[in-house]
Figure (cartoon, rainbow, N blue to C red):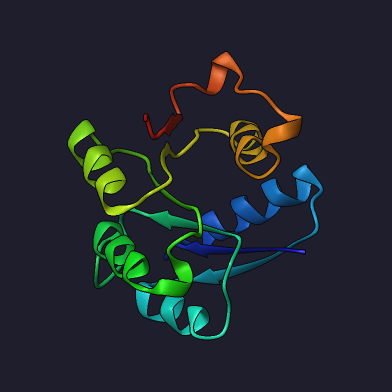
Length: 141
């Protein structure tokens, strides 16, 4: 069973992620944290397979939270995807520098989110559709 942590204070985003993950039809346990403090309490007892982190969360922003995640040895190899409706190249570059696996522009539709999550969680079975390239910005080597 995949373990996925979503860090976002918007309850609607929790619902959208849950529905998209259900649509993908994977066996996943999805945990939600409304802020970094709640996320770190989850990380005390769980090493997730994936972390999805909103750039705009209360108290500390997503970049600061990402930096703290990468300071923890047991989370250093966990893929972390920073997402937001709006970010610029400077934010994307900073996120990648801090250790984000990739940055995702929040999709406008649930259907696009399903395709993005499929690409991330089931990469061997999927391909990056041209229609979602504007939303998914993988790190470059």
